[in-house]
Length: 288
Image (tube, rainbow, N blue to C red; front, side, top):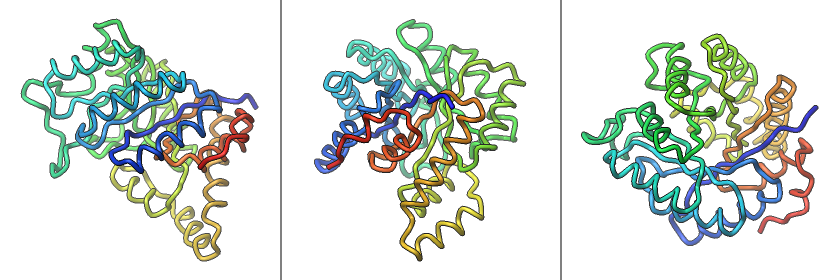
């Protein structure tokens, strides 16, 4: 079994304690030699400045290839492209271009009157600059705003045609969910790499809340397993087993890249990477 390339997602800190947690996470996972790491925006684009600072620091201090998230939320086209230019000036060559979630208190995304109305428009504008490798999001299970089960494939094709070079999926719990989506994308003429997004389950209750917000189906058998594991005090063991098994099935199915949503909690991601034998150096690093 050929080891896949790996990548990690971090989010920018908003408190001093969160700062320490981010840098501990980066330090713990950098030895795994990720293909890239990404840094998110907060909900509604609330952490633009913090994201920029985190992107710059990670790139300079750890030598990692950083893909900065950029969204359409609550900004004009000019403001959004100005942020992109500031990334380019900082040496960033990759952007994860997203529509973004609705700002806090809003039920649905509403485009700024002078802003980008969709991720497709954002991708088109970024592609015209010629300065970035553009990654986009993908939904192997229907996005909450999708009109039907084919809409996510159609929308991804539009983003790829607009200039995106690869896609990272929302997390899912079963490998077959990804394989069905990948097959549908191939049938639709999408030939860009589609990277599965992996969520190591640090908290089962938290994972279910995330799933409810983004339309991810929770298998009943997995819910029962975590309830039993909680009674027996074996949640961490189950989480490691579940995530490693999922990744192994994906690799056996031809997946060449895995993107881990770390939640700035490196321990479980590090253990999964070690269990997969991707880079043994990561096992030698201690997490504070």
